[in-house]
Length: 229
Ligand code: ADP
Ligand code: ADP
Image (cartoon, rainbow, N blue to C red; front, side):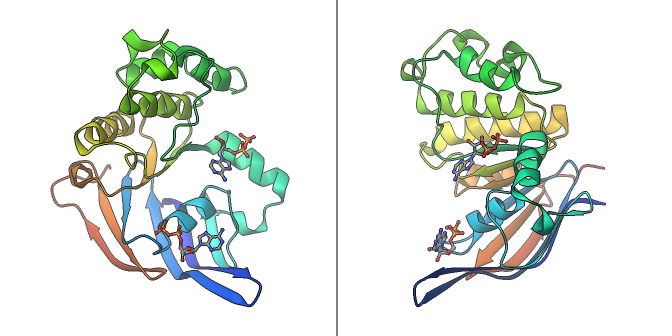
């Protein structure tokens, strides 16, 4: 059964007289253990859907269920708890604290989680065991993003929502970041939805959804990769 089930999700942003239809009735099931990739031109609604699934934004209409619970009925307090307990976020910009080392940036999260990984373990999983004592400014962009990924996985979220995690990186470095996500998916069985323009994503995606004008124009299974059981 799907871990996430979105039905008829519509999002309208209003500012004054202007209405922007960011999503126009999107259906998307996300299955346990899979990597779903969201492609499509800028402005087609990908981030809006990811933010709604992650409890960062609310749908105007439609239904979004997480393990059967309808997120659209959640209070702000339930939203905050849902994000904290179930979702790992990765964004284009790493938002690391510059005055803290890689290890300390990850430890900040593990200190407030109920069943966290050790920071060392999370950093090792993204290939940064030898960079734990470095400060963000001493790390490359790809390394900083992998610290941000270690921080996101350290609380063992069931789902990782990644919005252009390779957006600020050159394509080779971006592939290293995607490989780190793929390894986490395989070892921790973490379900993932990833927005990216990096062509290397084709190697790690189980399914690819292509957005156009607030709709899913195409949904494809990646024949090169077996779906998780
Ligand atoms: P994508 O992630 O595919 O680039 P987005 O989901 O960011 O697309 O945006 C979809 C549409 O919604 C765009 O037209 C965008 O300008 C609009 N939009 C997104 N966020 C807001 C917002 N907070 N206020 C107004 N319009 C927004
Ligand atoms: P909590 O306090 O329960 O962790 P937050 O409101 O901090 O919940 O949100 C959860 C995660 O989402 C955090 O990692 C936070 O940095 C991130 N986040 C929240 N809102 C935004 C936003 N508008 N843009 C980028 N990241 C955000």
